[in-house]
Image (cartoon, rainbow, N blue to C red; front, side, top):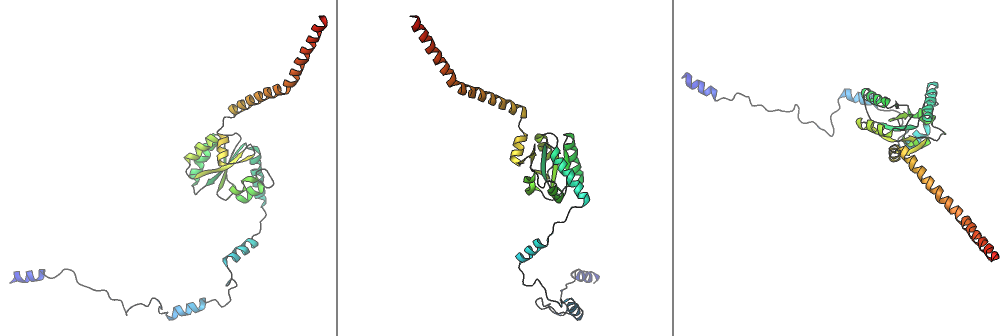
Length: 244
């Protein structure tokens, strides 16, 4: 008998069957019920004054923002920094402008060390300071490249190849262009001019000038020399006729 009772108990499921049922019916999503506390809060937060920007368009907002923006004068410390920037621009033969993405200070320090070994200096200044430093100067051509993400590399010598190798090691810094010996150049011209062998270019220029000078001398002295030879021939012919 006990065996049959045990068999019957084993046939019952171990888990109970249950069904979820939402309390008090469905929720109205389109028109939810607002309770008294929430209604009081909404009433208190309702603005009681008219919005002055109610009928304005986005273009009108932009125009008003531009008109209200006033140029703030530089602080005394920023004036000192602008003089320092101008000194860097005047004393450096090579100036490279870099776009710097989000990067840690440790990675920046590694780049600075590599640049310092090549006698180059990594600097960062605010855009207002740089714009004030290059105002009314030959360096105004770089104004479109200046932003808060722009850094500068100053070098007393032209070492574009070394700079390019260092930039390849840093994946978050990109060259935008620069200045070589006071001339504003695009990125392509900057790299092309910097990779030239200046000594070889000078030698080829000297050879071209020498050949051009020789050709010019020959062209200028051709007619006088032919005239002199003709006159000599006429003179010798007349002397031989008188002797006969």
